[in-house]
Amino acid sequence: MNSLTVTLRLLPILLVTLLSSVSCSRVTLVYHSADFVIRQYANDSLHLTEDQLADWEPSLNTALDRHRSEELPLLAGFFDALLQASQSGFDQPRMTCLIASFREIYQHHARIAVTLASPLLASLTPAQIDRLERRFTKDARDDRADLTRRDWPHEQQKRARRYRKAIEGWVGSLQDSQATLVAGITARMPDSEAAIVDYRIRKREELLAVLRDHADASRIEAFMSAWLVDFSDLPPTLEHDSQLIGQRISELFIELGASLDDGQRQRLHKRLHELVDDLMQLQKQPRMEHIRC
Image (cartoon, rainbow, N blue to C red; front, side):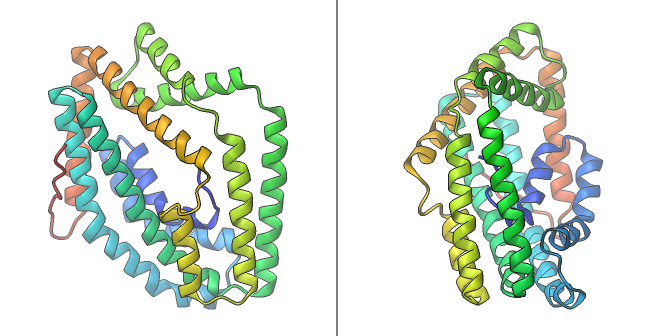
C-alpha cells in the first residue's frame, strides 16, 4: 500500500531503505546518516523553526537508539528466515509466516514513526498547519487528476516493470519466461488506487481537524496509531485488497523461486547473507531475533 501521509514517512524510511537496498555498504551508509535524512525531511515537510527542531532532537535520538536495539535484530531475523526459506524452497506455509512477519515489522516501524512525529505535529503553529493544509489540498487535487488520466493496462505494465526491476536487484537479469511470470501475477493484483486516495484524503482532513483543535502529543499519537499502525477504520475494500496482494506476493515468491537458475539463486543468497551480516554489524550488541518460518 502507498504511504498514507507525508509526515509519517519519517521513520518507515528506515525500513523502506533497508528493504530496497541490496548493497551492504549502501545500507550502512544510509543507516548512519538516518538522523540527518529524517531531520531534513521533517523540516522540508513541515517548515519547522530552529527551536522546534532543537526541542525534537532528543526524541529523534531516542527513536534511532530504539530502532538500533529493538528493530535491527528483528530485521536480521526476518532476512535470515527469508534466506532459509529460499534455501529450502518457498512454499505456502513459509510464505504465510513471512508475510505475517513482514506486517509485524511494518507495525513496529509505524509505531516508532507515530511516536516520533506526534510531538512535532503538536508543536505546529497555526501558520504551519495552514501550510500543511495547502500541501494536502494540492496533493489531493493532483491525486484526483491522476485518477482521471489512469489507463489500467498501462498501470499494470508499470507495476510489472517496478516489480521486475526490484527483483532483478536481488537475483540479476530475469529470463523472458520469468518476466512473463512476474507480469502475469502482478496483473492479477487489485487496483486499489482510487480507494487509497479517498481514504488518504479523509484521514488527512481528520488529522488537520485534530491539529486545529490544539491536540497535545498524546492525543495526536492515539489518532495516528489508530490510522497508521492498527488500521482500525481501514475500509473493507482496502482490507480485502491487502489480503489479495499478500496472496499474489506469496504466489510470486513460490513460482519465481522455483524458476531461479543456479546463478540467480547464488546471487540472491549472497545478497541476503550480506544484508543479514550488515544488520548485525550495525548493532552495538549484535543479536538476531529468530523467526520460525
